[in-house]
Image (cartoon, rainbow, N blue to C red; front, side, top):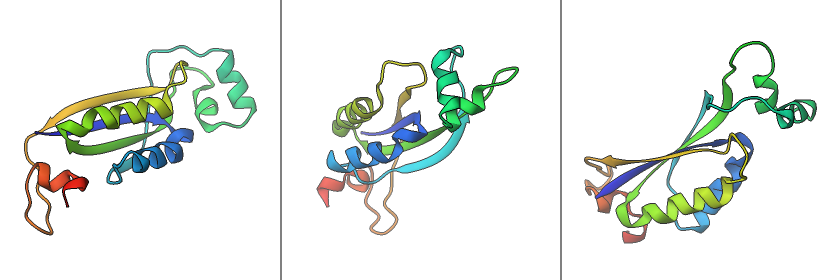
Length: 129
């Protein structure tokens, strides 16, 4: 079975996350710029971040709820690689502070590699080529 791992992470952790995934043997993924917010409230660390010029902190200041710039990673892998992908993303992004992000794991009904016509695990498993 094939799974889609969707992770929403801090912008400043993107390069480190990409490198860690490649080192973990997962080099194929998609990344997008997104904005959103969690349930957390603004604290003094946010103010400190704004003073340091961090875009995430600056966007949250002011009246009303603000959307925070983040990165969304989408990684489609065979079931057996899901723990490695999730663990790698957690290792790089978990600081213990609000705003670390979220990871979602979803089933994929079908995957097809356009170049070869391979399907499902063969279409997404880089170690099987």
